[in-house]
Length: 388
Image 1 (cartoon, helix red, strand yellow):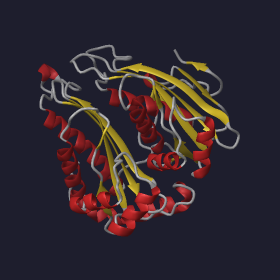
Image 2 (image 1 turned 60 degrees about the vertical axis):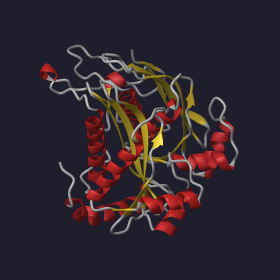
Image 3 (image 1 turned 30 degrees about the vertical axis):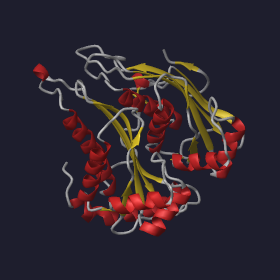
Image 4 (image 1 turned 45 degrees about the horizontal axis):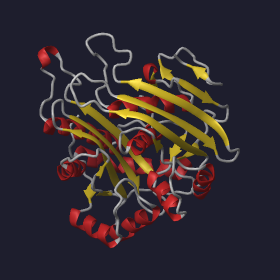
């Protein structure tokens, strides 16, 4: 599918759909979200979670151009930069309620596109990991769309290596194409919020517990708190948290609060993060944002292997607490490598920690929602469960 002006013809339907979706209670409980015609989007500079140098301006420009090709109006770079200076906006990884309200009133932007670069490697095999989300503006910003892409140049070598990608620019363009196609599908109503939501069996948690509190058919507002990083990978806590937000956004029954709102509450309360967030601080944040579930976790290992043929490793644990009862309703531990359950010719192997973390988070989220795994054999949802 190619991006073209056909998207602009579908925007009216998309606006009606999104307005109905949020006004009917599927967004934050007190939110009233409606984009206007034509929608105007502010594209933020990229957040660097890779810890390395990368062509951030080129990536942002390519992404911005692709958004414009959908028939969407984009706030000009000069106006965006002036706004950021005026409001002393330095954090690019999320949007607070104050900033969301200001950018709507002052720049008439209906949504903000927030993009985080998780991984960037130019030496062979080139690799890229990128996470992006579209967030509505106004007093109560809500996540409208989100997706992540993790690619390596040797993902699909094919016969005689004809599928290998040696040029990092070519791999970068492929990743941005996949990301923008997903966003384009959202605008044209071709995207399905429930598409491929089941996790794969090989990425299921090694151990999991779920109480009977989470019921199918109900909707729960989730406050994703900052994870605690015990790994050697810088920013691993934020990366894994974003993958969980992405996975839960795609699940029926969960409304995930914009992480920028969580950060805003922590700053206002002057909460210092030391080995994670305390329970009292977590309840404060949940009460402030009217959340039903509090999600927190720990990352114990997050490794990307730069050399060809290596296996990424991701280990984490996650816990969900119900605010009113203050009881744990979900707990799990996940440990995986990129070559898990790969038997022949590296078929199905994942070559980036980004792709691996995304699959693992999806497996946990689908289990939490009660939907289960692809090819699941009716595993029990109750009690501690050894899945080895």
